[in-house]
Image (cartoon, rainbow, N blue to C red; front, side, top):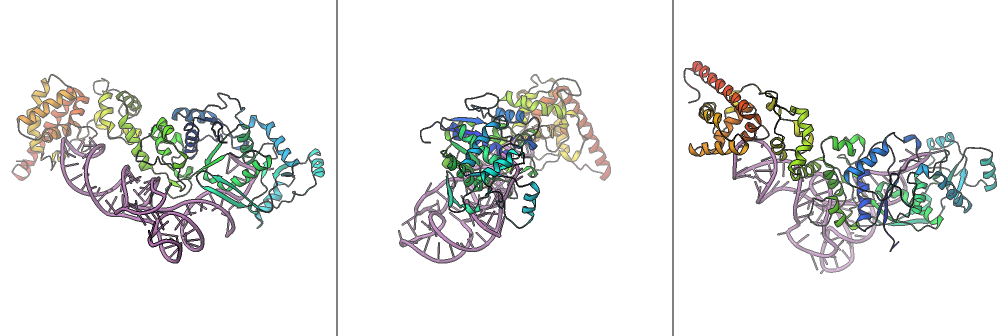
Length: 501
RNA sequence: GGCCCUAUGGUCAAGCGGCUAAGACGCCGCCCUCUCAAGGCGGAAACGGGAGUUCGAUUCUCCCUAGGGUCACCA
């Protein structure tokens, strides 16, 4: 195994769903190969014909494609060790199984499903090896006679079987713990337990990378390799990914499919980065890794043994970090559909297109997930009802009275401001504040509230006014002015003196 | 239940006999600030327990405890 080209394989079942646990395994398989200049192979494990889901292959290709895990061989691109779909390799397995039968490492079993079921119902643990000692000639006769059969692996009844895993070390188990597992099913398909060994060997896979849930069945595979005289691969078992309840992550934990996460607004690069750091550490303090960074930094020794809890908070952080790093164009275009779904692409009042550049940039630092992009933008479409209380801001030292004053003084200049852009508006407003020796906030706050009637908004007065355009901004400011005057007057009538002076 | 694996803050995780036990997320506080964010600074927060080995254990060994995985004609 030493000086052979490293070959790993990702071997998903076409069940219609790319679980993040599977994806994480794929990433590590890819990295084990690529970090050593090896090949990454895609193989489809469809030996369970009942679980096949239509369209699964597309999901698999699609996912690998969008995250950038490019395989060197696979069903879609071929390769020297095809076919890469197990159901197309069917004729391969039986001869191997029969070879094992010949050698006394396997046997034909004719037990009915009913008998096996009642065996399970009793306190019997595992298969009772009822057919293990049927003479070969008799077995052959019964097969020829058309009886239903399976082929089982004949486990040694004494001794131990061990293997060395690159992350967990040497693991040994007593052979008496091993069940005579089925190798070839009655429908003629091999079980995963058999096919993975045959395929990995015939495809010259050097490193078997999989989740640690396979640790306990690895001795059986090891026995198979030994029975065939195959060189066993390097085993790399990955720590499990757990849900917040510390149980193996599964569908009932919510969004655990790659596609689910994408739909929830996570960027593929962020998902990959997060997943790679679940169970692996570079050994230093780096956290942000592109796939090629990972290829460069990955080491098997960095793989952790302890299971890791999938933490959406941390994923959110990665996602927001990647969002902040996007180019203006990328951000604008990825946000476009979300904004469209929320407030449309055009202003409702004058049909002019929203300035998506401004919107996406003001959203940039505020997003954890792309799906958050639409929220909190409603005030742009339609001004919420006036609320005088909004003009009070303790820290800003603003009040309805003061705001009214500011707004009234700002209004004429705003109406003729040359440069109605974020830069122009900002320059004008801050200049106004400076000339009047007041804080920026004391002019910004009234403007923002007048234009939004909203306590908290993404973006400040400047961006919002630029977005709304001069006409609409002035309209909103005028409306606010009227409302503030009315409020002042009624307030004055009520208790005989101005509340705002 | 048998077997196997695991065990550093709430979470991810560095540490591989001697450290004030990193860092990140989250949380809290302060600063900055045109709201909210972002950003800057700071803070609280961990070696599951017990025996050994050793001059010295988070680190090595054993036991316990606690979690998890696995025991299919599923992968």
